Amino acid sequence: MQNKVVVITGASSGIGKALAEKFAAEGSNLALAARRIDRLFELKQKLSNVEVLPVETDVTSEEDCKKLIDQTIAKFGRIDILINNAGISMRAAFEDVELGVLRELMDVNYWGTVYCTKYALPHILKQNGSIVGVISTGGYIGLPGRTGYSASKFAVRGFLDTVRIEYLRSGLHVLVAAPGFTASEIRKTALTKNGKQQGETPRNENKMMSAEKCASIMYRAIKHRRRRMIISFWDGKVVVLLAKLWAWLIDQVLYQVFKREPDSPLR
Image 1 (cartoon, one colour):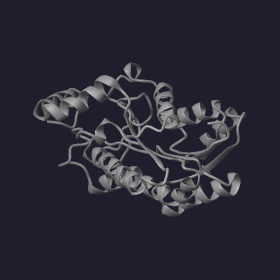
Image 2: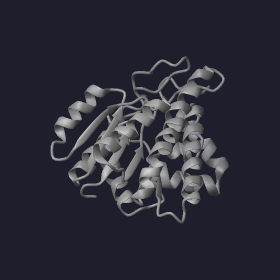
Image 3: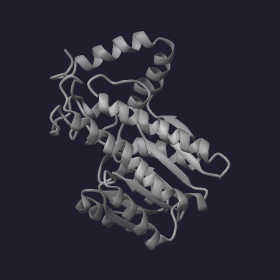
Image 4: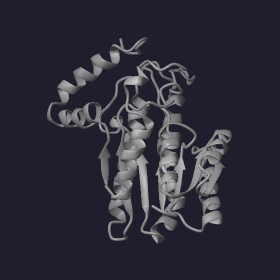
């Protein structure tokens, strides 16, 4: 990964920030995208051993995504890896949630991935490089109280799986990575039924996989050009497997697990 050029969206916190730190430690140059540009500049100061380009980016804006790619090419002349990590979550019953919340989830999680991939693809093809989509277990099974989130992650998986097939003979590598519950800000910024951030996580973040461990596993998957990876075990590989074998049972289990959350939107 020495001197590779890696574009990471959602790089101001959580998994995105941890990925930036991991790739920098391995000698990769970085284009980091997020809305919180101040955090990106703070991260740039920390990653002084490599070249870092912070770009203020709202991935719901096609123009911003194009600007991110254009500025990366202007500075580095190439793109080897695009990691579509920017994402938001939600927590509300479908009957209560405003439709605008679901649109926002799709705009960030799905369309952000599509926009960045569209503009980066020609450059990545020249390098026989990698496109990565960060989904979650919710991209394989429906998570109650998170209809928009699961729908957007299913959409990202379908989109990138199709891109992989279209460019099967081109040398393009496509990885869809699905972390389970990972300690990050995503639950704090999750949208409630009216679009406001919930502020506090309903889960114990200390019992979750760290963002750094998740990033390390993803780094190895990218390096070895894996096509799919469900990162966690019990709330990832096991649940997805059981959902294939006994879907009715997993439906019941998921309902009970999410209903027991503090202030659960489930009735």
